[in-house]
Length: 100
Length: 100
Image (tube, one colour):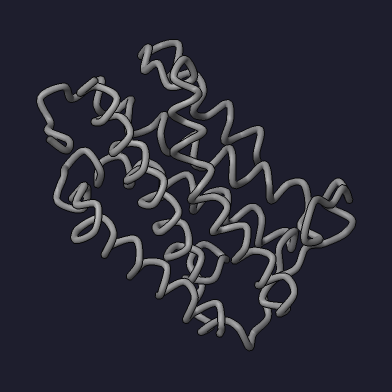
């Protein structure tokens, strides 16, 4: 599913030339602080038993706070796909105003 | 706190930041809602995959029990807050980078 999200959005970089990957520093700055908050939430939710993962269907590699690797990838790939999407919409609809 | 309470809080925080703190006012822009419509479509698809195959499972005690495309409705609030949070940050950085 992470692969699906990557392939579903990455073509926007090349076909619509949204230049998100080329602005990777700006992307990192946009994603990191928000993702960190959600990773703390994820760590809490896992420890409180709000959700859990089928051990047979994940890689079984765990990062800090006992969070599966897939979750860290999720909090990188999903925000990136969101940025690619809004930039694609901005490219297609150039007259739509966004912030200042 | 339950997943329901956390997810609602995350949406309230993201909306407050957008409208009153950073004042990106993405929630008043067609460009945001068009992008979100695209994103939520894909989210429902991936949610359905991850939950119907029991890759991710949820404690009945942490959720209200309403499910959309097999996933708890809380996931949509969670996703909305994540996407809005990242896009607020991206658009804010984009505006300040362009001013320089």
